[in-house]
Length: 371
Ligand SMILES: *[C@@H]1O[C@H](CO)[C@@H](O)[C@H](O)[C@H]1NC(C)=O
Ligand SMILES: *[C@@H]1O[C@H](CO)[C@@H](O)[C@H](O)[C@H]1NC(C)=O
Ligand SMILES: *[C@@H]1O[C@H](CO)[C@@H](O)[C@H](O)[C@H]1NC(C)=O
Ligand SMILES: *[C@@H]1O[C@H](CO)[C@@H](O)[C@H](O)[C@H]1NC(C)=O
Image (cartoon, rainbow, N blue to C red; front, side):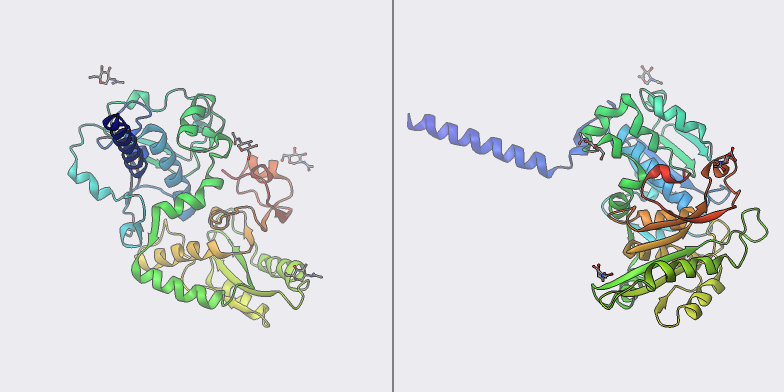
């Protein structure tokens, strides 16, 4: 009888140990969702010297979408950005080791490059695809080159419902806007040197919890391009901030203003406009990183992007960098205003057709045309 009780205790104890060790193991490593064995299969976001990759926002969109594919197809996720500046020198892997250099430890038997670029027709395909990448089941490395949120249609793909739920996500929220803050943190850390700069900067920007940060991003547009806005547009931004926040403030609200722009002089203009407020900005962060030629300007662009996680209010251009910077907060749509066309159908017809613009409160994905 005694032995019998002992046996029960031992069995229960063993079961607990097994359960704990199961919980401690990264579950995603054991569950094989699409039936392929992990670790020998990879998916890599790539931006090499001769690729047209877009700016940081385009890259973030495609990186996050590729990460979504990696989860759904059970492939190990890698990032390779070597255009102009080796990205590994700026951002380092956090919880997920995406360094493409890890690949050298594996024998890659078969590689497939998929160039989605800005071909939005893939949205329709991924909304209906039954079995993602089943045609590449034996391909050890899939390389993705793209610049948009091609994984967002998964939120509406009926065939992916159970896979997405198995991963622990609510399917209707399986969209970059809701996943960005969590995933960006999971993937990226600033390098040590930049992280020190970041921390010093944030202490100045937000000296205490009562300080509310108003962030503004003014994208004038590439010089000479169709999208280039009138230089006077900046005053609409400054006046919007003044009329809606500063003039309405009471004694208990403290504001600091953070400015980023694709033109350096815009930042200085803000400093001269908001004379009674602390105005902050990073110098030399205005470069479009697809044309930049060194790591320093890319570092500043990415530092800008990290700083925007701290914004309480966002007043931004209809531009990927501003919008994604503000989405990268725990509540992506909180106090977010986008300078955009009153008539969004105009923009759908031609994305660079900017006219009859105003500040739209962005509270819902459908409010503006953004892909
Ligand atoms: C993958 O490899 C297996 C085994 O060699 C083969 O039976 C199958 O047809 C292959 N599938 C594809 C899509 O190539
Ligand atoms: C998923 O999220 C939507 C929108 O937030 C919500 O309405 C729905 O109830 C959620 N579904 C589940 C199963 O939690
Ligand atoms: C004053 O500011 C506080 C903090 O921002 C806010 O909660 C309160 O509603 C404001 N009061 C008025 C009258 O605007
Ligand atoms: C918005 O733009 C579309 C296409 O450019 C046009 O057909 C439509 O009449 C416009 N709507 C309004 C309210 O002006």
